[in-house]
Image 1 (cartoon, each protein chain N blue to C red):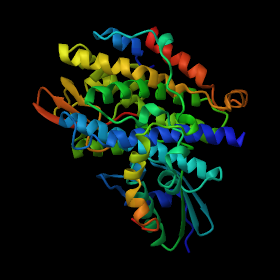
Image 2: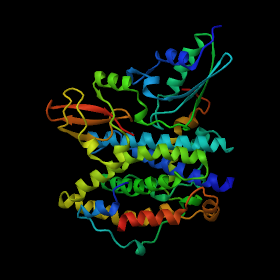
Image 3: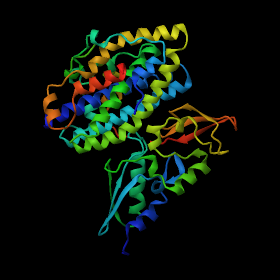
Image 4: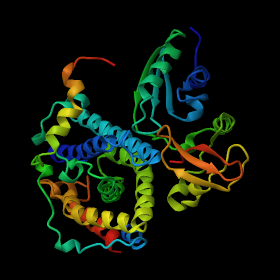
Length: 201
Length: 161
Length: 56
């Protein structure tokens, strides 16, 4: 169970860590001051979430959080490709934020029932914080998705470009059946279904 | 040495304030989740307001200092066993926040049920609710930015979470 | 509950193309990344690697 659990925590932590860094690249460059602050705050939240998860990994015998975060090479990271893509223009960053954080909120919702207690406790905490990330994403997607011809066509282009990468968030792990049968995590397939339902419902 | 109880330690910790909101003690903030005394060792459990709170190590060091200067040993553990919610802020703490000019957080359960609670935060100056949410993210992770149409001024709210 | 993404998209003028037609971009979970990750890691870890024993 330990390998399966570690792989699960690593991929969630790495997603937060890498997207947190991408978000931080908006600091000082946001299209307006409030968005600059929003992306910077979300960066801080996400790096904080990754730190809590790397700390959990240390309890499971991995190295300390700084070593894990700063000394691995790219091929040792488990994040999905979606989060590492460059920020591009604001439209892509917004669409990625919207698609990723919707999935992430659902992922932590599922983890509330994890049989691994530290993860369930942390999920309870993180879920409340992610609420603000999804509120933010929804607000701006609505504003710009029905704004001007240019804002709509930019978001549409970014949405079309993002979807294959977004589906990559649900890449199955070699340990899926173990995670599910041990009650640690309900699995990528279930997460993808819930996310899709959110998209399609 | 005199016998101490967890209430004694609570009194001591009244002097340790939130570094970002100096009118609020850690006790009133609700981040001290457990106090146990074992002989001359004070065992404390703390939990962060936000997971990414950068002030956590600083607050932990101040807690240890407050106990050690009274001749006791301190052991402080940070965990999520009893995780923080804005509902943990005491009534005294909420009054202090308002005086400080920060709107105290409404009941956190409402954030999941009704977004209006964020859209129409109560202005700490005039108590009016003719206000707008300007940004769910503010100068620190635990604050959001609002605008009061009556006062025609911006204010911050301690986020319900 | 979170507002459903579709509900949000419905309130915009954006179109959601059929997800079944999408070919997921996999690989990241097993360490096969795009060319963008390593430069990001190099930048992010620069300060740490310059002196791993440094204390704040």
